[in-house]
Image (cartoon, rainbow, N blue to C red; front, side):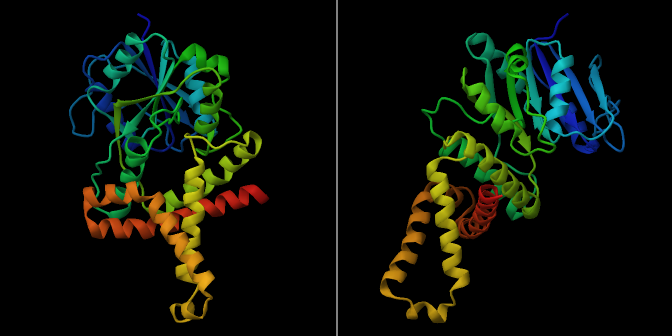
Amino acid sequence: MKPYLSIIIPYHNSSETIERLLLSITRSKNAPSYEIIVVDDGSTVSFRPPSRNPSGSRVKPGMTIRTIRLQRNMGPAVARNRGVEKAKGEFVVFLDSDVELFADTLANIGRIYQDDPDIVALTGVWVKEQKSHAFFPNFKALRDWSYWINERDKSGYYFLFSTRIASIKRSVFLRLGGFDETYPAPLVEDIELTYRIARRYAVIFAPSVRVRHEFESFWPIAKKYFLRAYYWTKLYQRRKKFDPVATTLQEAITTISGVGVVLFFFMIPISQIRQISLIGQIGLICFLLVHVFLIRKFLVFLYREKGMVFAIKGFFVGLVLYCFIFAGALLGRIH
Protein backbone atom coordinates (compact mmCIF):
# COMPACT_ATOMS: atom_id res chain seq x y z
CA MET A 1 0.00 0.00 0.00
CA LYS A 2 1.38 3.38 -0.98
CA PRO A 3 1.94 5.59 2.11
CA TYR A 4 0.34 9.00 2.37
CA LEU A 5 3.31 10.52 4.23
CA SER A 6 7.02 9.85 3.84
CA ILE A 7 8.92 10.88 6.98
CA ILE A 8 12.49 11.90 6.08
CA ILE A 9 15.04 12.01 8.92
CA PRO A 10 18.71 12.91 8.32
CA TYR A 11 20.95 11.13 10.77
CA HIS A 12 24.54 11.91 11.73
CA ASN A 13 25.90 10.34 14.91
CA SER A 14 22.66 11.03 16.78
CA SER A 15 21.67 7.54 17.92
CA GLU A 16 20.39 8.63 21.32
CA THR A 17 18.03 11.35 20.12
CA ILE A 18 16.75 9.52 17.05
CA GLU A 19 15.59 6.61 19.20
CA ARG A 20 13.35 8.99 21.15
CA LEU A 21 12.05 10.42 17.89
CA LEU A 22 11.24 6.98 16.48
CA LEU A 23 9.48 6.04 19.68
CA SER A 24 7.36 9.19 19.51
CA ILE A 25 6.38 8.33 15.93
CA THR A 26 5.16 4.90 17.01
CA ARG A 27 2.93 6.60 19.59
CA SER A 28 1.12 8.60 16.92
CA LYS A 29 -2.66 8.34 17.00
CA ASN A 30 -5.02 8.46 14.00
CA ALA A 31 -2.08 9.14 11.70
CA PRO A 32 -2.45 8.60 7.95
CA SER A 33 -0.37 5.81 6.43
CA TYR A 34 3.32 6.64 6.54
CA GLU A 35 6.80 5.34 5.90
CA ILE A 36 10.02 6.27 7.72
CA ILE A 37 13.21 6.92 5.79
CA VAL A 38 16.40 7.55 7.75
CA VAL A 39 19.31 8.91 5.72
CA ASP A 40 22.61 8.08 7.42
CA ASP A 41 24.78 11.05 6.46
CA GLY A 42 28.20 9.39 6.66
CA SER A 43 28.08 8.69 10.41
CA THR A 44 31.13 7.16 12.07
CA VAL A 45 28.74 4.62 13.63
CA SER A 46 26.10 3.59 11.13
CA PHE A 47 22.44 3.93 11.98
CA ARG A 48 20.76 0.74 13.10
CA PRO A 49 16.97 0.59 13.50
CA PRO A 50 16.37 -0.03 17.21
CA SER A 51 14.60 -3.19 18.27
CA ARG A 52 13.85 -1.61 21.63
CA ASN A 53 12.98 1.93 22.60
CA PRO A 54 14.83 3.88 25.32
CA SER A 55 12.42 2.65 28.01
CA GLY A 56 13.36 -0.96 27.28
CA SER A 57 10.11 -2.11 25.70
CA ARG A 58 9.95 -3.33 22.12
CA VAL A 59 9.20 -0.87 19.35
CA LYS A 60 5.84 -1.00 17.64
CA PRO A 61 5.42 -4.26 15.73
CA GLY A 62 5.40 -3.80 11.99
CA MET A 63 7.19 -0.45 12.02
CA THR A 64 9.46 -0.49 8.99
CA ILE A 65 12.40 1.89 8.72
CA ARG A 66 14.09 2.25 5.36
CA THR A 67 17.72 3.31 5.63
CA ILE A 68 19.85 5.11 3.06
CA ARG A 69 23.57 5.22 3.74
CA LEU A 70 25.75 8.03 2.34
CA GLN A 71 29.42 7.11 2.09
CA ARG A 72 30.59 10.44 3.50
CA ASN A 73 29.12 13.33 5.43
CA MET A 74 27.50 15.60 2.84
CA GLY A 75 25.18 17.70 4.98
CA PRO A 76 21.44 17.67 5.70
CA ALA A 77 20.47 19.26 2.36
CA VAL A 78 21.92 16.31 0.43
CA ALA A 79 20.58 13.79 2.96
CA ARG A 80 17.03 15.10 2.74
CA ASN A 81 17.13 15.23 -1.05
CA ARG A 82 18.28 11.60 -1.24
CA GLY A 83 15.50 10.61 1.11
CA VAL A 84 12.83 12.30 -0.99
CA GLU A 85 14.16 10.61 -4.13
CA LYS A 86 13.39 7.24 -2.57
CA ALA A 87 10.12 8.28 -0.93
CA LYS A 88 6.80 6.84 -2.05
CA GLY A 89 4.37 9.10 -0.19
CA GLU A 90 2.32 11.88 -1.73
CA PHE A 91 3.66 14.27 0.91
CA VAL A 92 7.05 14.29 2.63
CA VAL A 93 7.55 15.27 6.25
CA PHE A 94 10.97 16.57 7.29
CA LEU A 95 12.06 16.03 10.88
CA ASP A 96 15.36 16.73 12.59
CA SER A 97 16.70 13.69 14.42
CA ASP A 98 16.59 15.47 17.79
CA VAL A 99 12.86 16.25 18.00
CA GLU A 100 9.95 14.27 19.40
CA LEU A 101 6.42 14.23 17.99
CA PHE A 102 3.18 14.73 19.85
CA ALA A 103 0.65 11.94 19.48
CA ASP A 104 -1.49 14.09 17.14
CA THR A 105 1.28 15.65 15.02
CA LEU A 106 1.00 13.32 12.01
CA ALA A 107 -2.79 13.23 12.23
CA ASN A 108 -2.90 17.03 12.11
CA ILE A 109 -0.62 17.13 9.07
CA GLY A 110 -2.87 14.72 7.23
CA ARG A 111 -6.00 16.61 8.27
CA ILE A 112 -4.62 19.92 6.97
CA TYR A 113 -3.89 18.50 3.54
CA GLN A 114 -7.18 16.64 3.34
CA ASP A 115 -9.28 19.62 4.46
CA ASP A 116 -7.70 21.99 1.92
CA PRO A 117 -6.30 20.37 -1.27
CA ASP A 118 -4.78 23.72 -2.32
CA ILE A 119 -2.20 23.56 0.48
CA VAL A 120 1.10 22.12 -0.72
CA ALA A 121 3.51 23.10 2.07
CA LEU A 122 3.33 23.74 5.79
CA THR A 123 5.62 24.35 8.72
CA GLY A 124 5.00 23.43 12.33
CA VAL A 125 6.28 24.69 15.66
CA TRP A 126 8.36 23.43 18.56
CA VAL A 127 6.82 23.97 21.97
CA LYS A 128 8.38 26.28 24.54
CA GLU A 129 8.77 23.77 27.37
CA GLN A 130 12.25 22.39 28.06
CA LYS A 131 13.33 19.47 30.23
CA SER A 132 16.43 21.39 31.25
CA HIS A 133 16.21 24.02 34.00
CA ALA A 134 19.26 25.86 32.64
CA PHE A 135 18.69 29.46 31.63
CA PHE A 136 19.77 29.50 28.00
CA PRO A 137 17.83 26.51 26.60
CA ASN A 138 14.68 27.98 28.14
CA PHE A 139 15.51 31.44 26.82
CA LYS A 140 16.01 30.10 23.29
CA ALA A 141 12.80 28.07 23.42
CA LEU A 142 10.84 31.13 24.54
CA ARG A 143 12.58 33.28 21.92
CA ASP A 144 11.47 30.95 19.13
CA TRP A 145 7.97 30.48 20.52
CA SER A 146 7.47 34.22 20.80
CA TYR A 147 8.67 34.66 17.21
CA TRP A 148 6.21 32.07 15.88
CA ILE A 149 3.22 32.84 18.10
CA ASN A 150 3.39 36.35 19.59
CA GLU A 151 5.36 38.39 17.09
CA ARG A 152 4.75 36.81 13.69
CA ASP A 153 3.08 38.73 10.91
CA LYS A 154 -0.32 37.02 10.89
CA SER A 155 -1.09 38.50 7.47
CA GLY A 156 2.13 37.09 6.01
CA TYR A 157 1.89 35.02 2.85
CA TYR A 158 4.56 32.54 3.78
CA PHE A 159 6.68 31.43 6.69
CA LEU A 160 10.01 29.72 7.17
CA PHE A 161 9.95 26.14 5.91
CA SER A 162 11.71 24.96 9.04
CA THR A 163 13.05 21.45 8.62
CA ARG A 164 12.80 20.80 12.33
CA ILE A 165 9.16 20.05 11.44
CA ALA A 166 7.84 20.83 7.94
CA SER A 167 6.00 19.09 5.14
CA ILE A 168 5.55 19.55 1.40
CA LYS A 169 3.94 17.76 -1.51
CA ARG A 170 6.62 15.49 -2.95
CA SER A 171 5.93 16.39 -6.59
CA VAL A 172 6.30 20.10 -5.80
CA PHE A 173 9.54 19.52 -3.89
CA LEU A 174 11.02 17.59 -6.81
CA ARG A 175 9.84 20.14 -9.35
CA LEU A 176 11.54 22.92 -7.37
CA GLY A 177 14.80 20.96 -7.31
CA GLY A 178 14.89 20.23 -3.58
CA PHE A 179 17.33 21.77 -1.14
CA ASP A 180 20.38 23.61 -2.43
CA GLU A 181 23.17 21.06 -2.02
CA THR A 182 25.94 23.65 -2.12
CA TYR A 183 25.33 24.20 1.61
CA PRO A 184 27.49 21.58 3.37
CA ALA A 185 25.97 22.13 6.81
CA PRO A 186 22.65 23.26 8.34
CA LEU A 187 23.01 26.91 7.36
CA VAL A 188 20.29 28.65 5.31
CA GLU A 189 19.19 25.85 3.00
CA ASP A 190 15.73 25.97 4.59
CA ILE A 191 15.48 29.73 4.02
CA GLU A 192 16.64 29.47 0.43
CA LEU A 193 14.10 26.73 -0.31
CA THR A 194 11.37 28.79 1.35
CA TYR A 195 12.02 31.60 -1.12
CA ARG A 196 11.67 29.23 -4.06
CA ILE A 197 8.48 27.69 -2.69
CA ALA A 198 6.99 31.13 -2.07
CA ARG A 199 7.37 32.19 -5.70
CA ARG A 200 4.35 30.03 -6.49
CA TYR A 201 2.88 28.73 -3.25
CA ALA A 202 2.20 29.71 0.34
CA VAL A 203 3.99 28.01 3.21
CA ILE A 204 1.22 27.62 5.77
CA PHE A 205 2.03 27.99 9.47
CA ALA A 206 0.29 25.16 11.34
CA PRO A 207 0.48 25.64 15.15
CA SER A 208 -1.25 22.27 15.68
CA VAL A 209 1.75 20.51 14.08
CA ARG A 210 3.99 20.39 17.14
CA VAL A 211 7.26 18.81 18.21
CA ARG A 212 9.39 18.90 21.31
CA HIS A 213 12.99 20.03 20.97
CA GLU A 214 15.71 20.41 23.58
CA PHE A 215 17.98 23.35 22.84
CA GLU A 216 21.72 23.55 23.21
CA SER A 217 23.83 25.84 25.39
CA PHE A 218 24.83 29.38 24.47
CA TRP A 219 27.93 28.92 22.30
CA PRO A 220 26.58 26.43 19.74
CA ILE A 221 23.49 28.62 19.26
CA ALA A 222 25.55 31.82 19.02
CA LYS A 223 27.70 30.20 16.32
CA LYS A 224 24.58 29.22 14.38
CA TYR A 225 23.24 32.76 14.60
CA PHE A 226 26.52 34.08 13.24
CA LEU A 227 26.65 31.64 10.33
CA ARG A 228 22.99 32.01 9.39
CA ALA A 229 23.36 35.80 9.42
CA TYR A 230 26.43 35.52 7.22
CA TYR A 231 24.81 33.28 4.62
CA TRP A 232 21.44 35.04 4.75
CA THR A 233 23.18 38.31 3.96
CA LYS A 234 24.45 36.66 0.77
CA LEU A 235 20.86 35.80 -0.12
CA TYR A 236 19.75 39.33 0.71
CA GLN A 237 22.34 40.83 -1.60
CA ARG A 238 20.75 38.91 -4.47
CA ARG A 239 17.13 39.57 -3.48
CA LYS A 240 17.40 43.09 -1.98
CA LYS A 241 14.39 42.31 0.17
CA PHE A 242 13.56 41.82 3.84
CA ASP A 243 10.92 39.23 4.65
CA PRO A 244 9.17 37.38 7.53
CA VAL A 245 11.18 34.22 6.82
CA ALA A 246 14.58 35.24 8.12
CA THR A 247 14.75 38.96 8.88
CA THR A 248 12.18 41.71 8.61
CA LEU A 249 13.19 45.36 8.39
CA GLN A 250 12.10 45.77 12.01
CA GLU A 251 14.32 42.88 13.09
CA ALA A 252 17.25 44.41 11.24
CA ILE A 253 16.69 47.70 13.07
CA THR A 254 16.38 45.78 16.35
CA THR A 255 19.78 44.18 15.71
CA ILE A 256 21.43 47.52 14.97
CA SER A 257 19.87 49.15 18.03
CA GLY A 258 21.00 46.23 20.19
CA VAL A 259 24.58 46.58 18.99
CA GLY A 260 24.34 50.31 19.69
CA VAL A 261 23.28 49.59 23.26
CA VAL A 262 26.21 47.19 23.71
CA LEU A 263 28.65 49.80 22.45
CA PHE A 264 27.15 52.28 24.87
CA PHE A 265 27.37 50.09 27.95
CA PHE A 266 30.60 48.22 27.33
CA MET A 267 32.82 50.53 25.31
CA ILE A 268 32.21 53.76 27.19
CA PRO A 269 33.27 53.71 30.87
CA ILE A 270 30.59 54.98 33.25
CA SER A 271 33.03 57.58 34.54
CA GLN A 272 33.23 59.12 31.07
CA ILE A 273 29.51 59.31 30.29
CA ARG A 274 29.28 62.84 31.75
CA GLN A 275 32.05 63.96 29.42
CA ILE A 276 29.98 63.09 26.34
CA SER A 277 28.15 65.99 24.77
CA LEU A 278 24.44 66.38 25.41
CA ILE A 279 23.69 65.41 21.82
CA GLY A 280 25.82 62.28 22.22
CA GLN A 281 24.04 61.33 25.44
CA ILE A 282 20.66 61.78 23.81
CA GLY A 283 21.73 59.68 20.86
CA LEU A 284 22.96 56.86 23.06
CA ILE A 285 19.80 56.90 25.17
CA CYS A 286 17.75 56.76 21.98
CA PHE A 287 19.46 53.50 21.02
CA LEU A 288 18.35 52.01 24.34
CA LEU A 289 14.78 53.30 24.10
CA VAL A 290 14.38 52.16 20.51
CA HIS A 291 15.71 48.71 21.31
CA VAL A 292 13.49 48.26 24.36
CA PHE A 293 10.48 49.41 22.35
CA LEU A 294 11.19 46.96 19.53
CA ILE A 295 11.58 43.96 21.84
CA ARG A 296 8.85 44.97 24.29
CA LYS A 297 6.53 42.09 23.36
CA PHE A 298 9.28 39.56 23.95
CA LEU A 299 10.30 41.11 27.27
CA VAL A 300 6.71 41.09 28.51
CA PHE A 301 6.41 37.48 27.36
CA LEU A 302 9.58 36.51 29.29
CA TYR A 303 8.26 38.27 32.39
CA ARG A 304 4.92 36.48 32.23
CA GLU A 305 6.54 33.09 31.65
CA LYS A 306 9.55 33.22 33.97
CA GLY A 307 9.48 36.38 36.05
CA MET A 308 11.36 39.66 36.26
CA VAL A 309 14.87 38.28 36.92
CA PHE A 310 14.64 35.97 33.93
CA ALA A 311 13.38 38.80 31.71
CA ILE A 312 16.24 41.11 32.74
CA LYS A 313 18.81 38.39 32.16
CA GLY A 314 17.14 37.62 28.82
CA PHE A 315 17.48 41.26 27.81
CA PHE A 316 21.26 41.22 28.24
CA VAL A 317 21.76 37.76 26.71
CA GLY A 318 19.71 38.93 23.75
CA LEU A 319 22.06 41.89 23.31
CA VAL A 320 25.02 39.53 23.05
CA LEU A 321 23.23 37.40 20.45
CA TYR A 322 22.42 40.50 18.41
CA CYS A 323 26.15 41.20 18.31
CA PHE A 324 26.78 37.74 16.83
CA ILE A 325 24.04 38.33 14.25
CA PHE A 326 25.43 41.75 13.37
CA ALA A 327 28.98 40.40 13.07
CA GLY A 328 27.83 37.62 10.75
CA ALA A 329 25.80 40.02 8.60
CA LEU A 330 28.67 42.51 8.45
CA LEU A 331 31.12 39.83 7.37
CA GLY A 332 28.66 38.59 4.78
CA ARG A 333 28.34 42.11 3.43
CA ILE A 334 32.04 42.81 3.06
CA HIS A 335 33.38 39.30 2.32
